[in-house]
Structures are given as C-alpha cells and as structure tokens.
Figure 1 (spheres, one colour):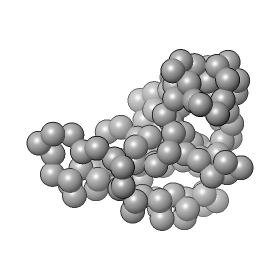
Figure 2 (tube, rainbow, N blue to C red; figure 1 turned 90 degrees about the vertical axis):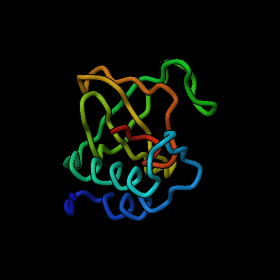
Figure 3 (tube, rainbow, N blue to C red; figure 1 turned 60 degrees about the horizontal axis):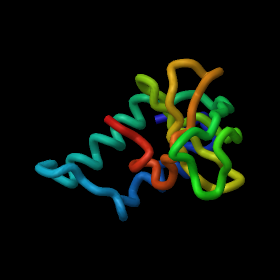
Figure 4 (cartoon, rainbow, N blue to C red; figure 1 turned 45 degrees about the horizontal axis):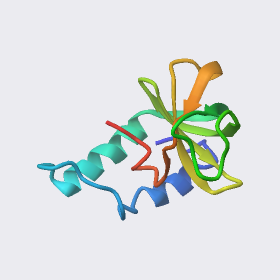
Amino acid sequence: MNHAHPYWPKLEAALSDTSGIIVPQGEDEGAYFERLRSSIREHATGAEMVSATVVAPGFAHRELGSRISGWLLARSEGYWLVYEPDEDQYYCFWGADADSLGAHGVCGNPLYCWWD
C-alpha cells in the first residue's frame, strides 16, 4: 500500500467494487478479486504523472493519436494503472518505457484495468 500517494485512498475504495468484471472460468470469484487487489498493492508506485498515446481500438471519448495523462498508481511488466482525476477515470497504459506508452482502450474499474 502506498500511503503517500494522494489518490491511493480513492483507489482503495474503488477496489471493493467488482460489478461488471468477468471472472475467468474455473476461478473462485473471491480469490480472483483478492489476487488482483493484492497484486495492485504489491506493485504500488510513488505519485508520478505519466502520459500515453491513444491507439486502436481507442476510446469513444478520445481520438486516436491524442494523449492521456494521469497519476501512476501501480506498474508491473508493461502494465501501468493510471488515474485521471479530471475525468475520475482509471486507465491501463501499456509499454516498457514511460516515454512511449500506449492507451489501447481499457478504462473503468481499476480491477478491470489490471492483469495478474
């Protein structure tokens, strides 16, 4: 857990909402969600602003090639969980380098935006 991050308390509250998230077939629902929560906490980062370029399939409310900026919350093996406070939206960015991240159309619930 990252108590110093200004958006961490908001994220913790959002991690309790599992509505609309599909659990992989054969997985125990409770164990699956707890594994995602634990992984996010394990990969917590300091407060850092990051940006990504919107790439296909994109988002209905953003043009391909536009930029999204937000606060990094967690990062693991190319997955970057980001919070955009003006929209009150969580995004998943992909990439190995902070200077060349892509936003491929995944946003919404932070559990949905994170893979483990």
